[in-house]
Length: 223
Image (cartoon, rainbow, N blue to C red; front, side, top):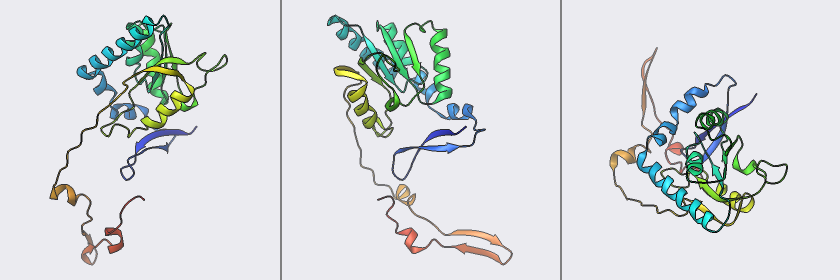
């Protein structure tokens, strides 16, 4: 069985899928993740709940059922928030199988199994229709696909696909806008992180110095 795990490419800044050994320790993957940090981030969670509750209320005020699509559900927290806020049903998407399995157990333990369906797929593989993963399109989109650079976790293509294939036109989205703040910093120490320095090693002939090639030193990085 092939096992794929997401890894951030430090050169390109993109998230890539890498194949791991079949004996890969999923517990370590979960332990290194930020799931626990997000669960304990009170400020984040309060704001998400406020946004979700407002979105559900707007849909209900239009006389519609509140159908939620939660992309990257993780532990299922945001889906459970949506149901608690009055959503009629929630489709929780999670591509990482160990986490999806955990979400199923968490949802069941909290008594939301009748209103939350956990789907172990990438959101771009989710289907809509009588025989699909979702019988109809959702009218509320909830996501937590953001990193410190906002869109580094593939948020834009996931959003684009969802709006094209998984949610209704003019659906509610939480969050629906963002502001990125940047601060210029000048630091000789940080600049040196981009440099390769000679390496001193001990051999049978004594200490040897490995000097990086000039071509490698001037490499601009990814195109």
